[in-house]
Each structure stands twice: as structure tokens, then as C-alpha cells.
Length: 476
View (tube, one colour):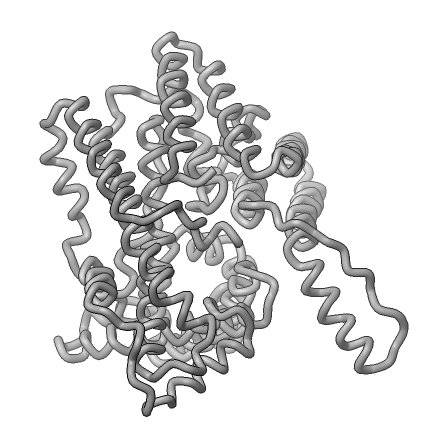
């Protein structure tokens, strides 16, 4: 079930009033059970069989959390239980996400070395959202172990946290310590920011249906499918367009998820903060997919040692964190290269500016800030080539085709140029633009806000073409 579709609208128009009816009737447990049931219905639209895998992940982490709580006086056993729990989560993710890649690469080596027999290749289906709900399961047990959560939570709360349908498929990655306390009492209807939630949903639908979809269909897919017959300008336009496409696509999902959750009375953290205005790569990762970058920092970089063991160890930890972050995105060498490029540049910035690499732009001149933005954006675009290409070889082919200066452009149109320009323009608008609009709509009756939003979505649907392509991060 995809957010900006008729199926989801009908689904949500049933879930929303039922959940609030339970809250208003002072039936908090019923409210939770309704949301959990709705979440599994939402997931079962993809595959009812894989819904059992989701429940298995929930049950695993709830059980590990119970054991961690029971072993409060036995720190060694708690650490062992935590290690086994994290290993089980990563093993589950590793099998479904990396078994095929590992088998193919190992078979290639076995054939090359003429050693033994090939490993059997199993048809393993990658469950939708497994990367996201696995990380959230790890967040629950680690937060319990660290004391960021005061106690293990009931099974229904853990199911709610991990399975909550707005963030289930593609994030944001919600922290257990930040979200689970919200389940201790019913949502307060007086504190639901209806207009802001509606604005986020409409804005997200616009970015996905208009900007991301049209750039993908008319330019990006064509450039990355076969760049060898295209000229330099078309390929550059395709690379820039993909930078805008992936931002509008993924930030759209996050905006819709945050808005949908807000209308149900729950808060998610912001996931994007105008990343293409960043003046360093360190600053970029404080603005792009913030729930992932902060997760990698707190649950991977810091446990690896962070910056506590000298400069060389700090550089190695930074690099490893980004390489593993790249592998998290997919089982392919192109993601390893993508993560390594980001990790390498973060190390370079750390070597030059130290721990304040993200804050250095504040002291630059105006020209320095512009140059910082231009360099960072083009470095990120270079990395996006490896991220988007179908393989590492295809990425190198596209980069080589940038030399086709003699071929005239055939794909660029004024409409596409305007979409790319619009995608860049919104990086430099006031960061609180939606909040300013919310303050205006705050005085408008709720039924008017709903009517205007419905009309806006109808117009967007008419302008967005036939159907709705899956969000890019559904495959991760």
C-alpha cells in the first residue's frame, strides 16, 4: 500500500476516526490494538506471509528486552543477552538482504580458484521495510540496556513502536527512547496540530507526484538506462535531476509519514533539513536522512569508539561507519563505493577542520560559503551516480559518457529544467516555511483545512500522471 493512493486514503479514513473514537471513549488499550491491527493490515497488502516475519522481529526484541530487564543486577549476563539480541537482528537482516549477493560473490571466487562446489542460490524475497524495522528493534534493546528506557514495555507497546504503519516501510527511523513514552497515555486531541499535519501530507504528495515522478520518467530513468548515446549536457542534467528526485521522493515519504502520525496524535522527528544548502559533507549528513545519520552515530560510530581513541582510530571509525551505512542501503558493490566515498570525504574534512567540521562554514566569507555549497553539492551528486546506477560498471560507464561533448542534448526541456530549479530553490527558502503557513491555517476551521487539502491533492493527482511509482527507499 503506497501513501498517495486511493487505497491508502480509504484505509486511513477508516483507521483515523476509529482510533480517535477509542481515545475519546477512554479506551487506551483498544486504541493501541486498533493501530497495531491497522499496521499489520497495511503491511499485509504487500505480503501477508512476510507480516509473520515482522511479528517475529517484534517478538524477538520484546523477549530480549524482558531478559535485559530481568538481569538488571547481573551486568555480564545483560551484555551477553544484548549481544545475542543484536546478532539475531543483524542475522535476520543479513540473510534476507545479503544472502544472494554473498553467494554470488563467493561462487565467483570458487569458480576462479577452481575450489570446491558452488553454493546453492536460493530465491530469497527481500521483505519491504526490513532495514527500518530491524534498526528500530535494535534501538529498543540497546536503549533498554543503556538505561535510556526506564523499563521493558508490554508486548502491545513494542508492537506499536516497531510496526506503526506511518514509518514501517521507509522511516523515519524512530528511537525507542523518544517514541515509547508517548504510549504511556492516550494522545491528547487538544494537542494535535491538524493544519501542520495536513500541510506536511499535501507538501509530500506534491514533491512525490509532481517533482520526483516527472523527473524520473522524463529524464533520470532514460539517462541511467543507456547513457552511451547521450551527450554531456543530457547526462549532467540527469545527474542533477536524480539529486532532486531522490530528495523530493524520500523527503516526501518522511513528510507524509510525519503528517499521518501527527494526525493520529504522535510525534516523529524531522528527517530532512534542506540538505543541498550544506557547506560541508559533515553538515550534509546533519541535514540528510537525519534519523539514519544519528542512528549510525549513536549505535555504530560511538560503540566503535567514536573519537575517544586518537585521530587514526577516529578516522577509521568514521570511514567504517559510512561503508557499513552504504551496505545497509543494499547488497551491491556500488553501495560499498558510495559509502566509501562519503566516508573518505568525512575523514578528509575531519583531518582539515577537526571535530567542528560541520560548524566551519559559519566563519566563512560569502564567497567561501557559496564555494562550500557548490563543492558539497557536486560531490554528493558524484556519489549519487553510484547510488542510482544499476551496477558499479554502469556507474563507471555513465561517468565515462560525460565526455560525449559532441552529442547535442535531446532530453532537456524547459519543464524539466524548471523542476530541477524548483528542487534547488526550496533548499534555500526559510527553514520554517511550513510552520509559518501553519500559523495562518491555525485560525482556519478544521473542515476548511480538510476541504482545501482534499482539493489540492485532487489537483496534484490530475497533474501527476497515471499511477504512483513506489518510493525509492522501499527497496532498502
